[in-house]
Image 1: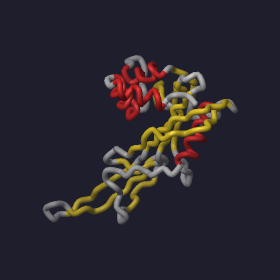
Image 2: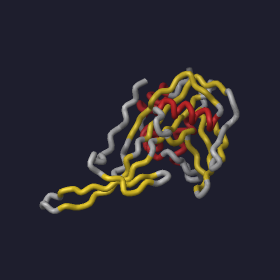
Image 3: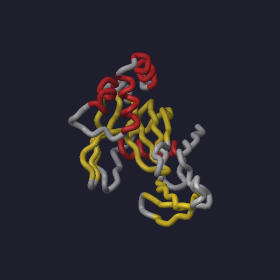
Image 4: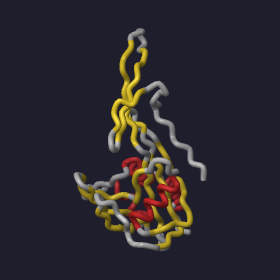
Length: 196
């Protein structure tokens, strides 16, 4: 599967200089000519891309995670995480699904990908995984506490509307809100999330 990286709204130009290298973010600056002929320094952060996976269990339930991380409150979302340097996004999706759920999948479908933050070059790839097989226990990073949370499609669609939880994937939440109010979109989602 050849997956193209979505382009940022404001690309970092080739002549930009990295002025800060962090653990998560690098910061780039460049001089830009303004409309009146003056020049100004522009700045943009860049970080490793992310994958998120919504896995469909054989019974049709969608495997979510209830997670805690240091400095972050409890949240619910798919499995996923950073794409390692030199790793392609599908390999990252397979690795993150296995680490955070213990499952492997026969099929990965790219639901959507976006790079939509104006001041951060950061692509997010959202996959649906099907044909699941449990092959191991969770293999979590030291900063993760994860509990698996299987939900029905209707419960999944309702997640962003709930006031008692924080649903982590805001871009997915927007798509699910659209589905709630459009029967045709719901049929498309039902087909997309149908188990193998």
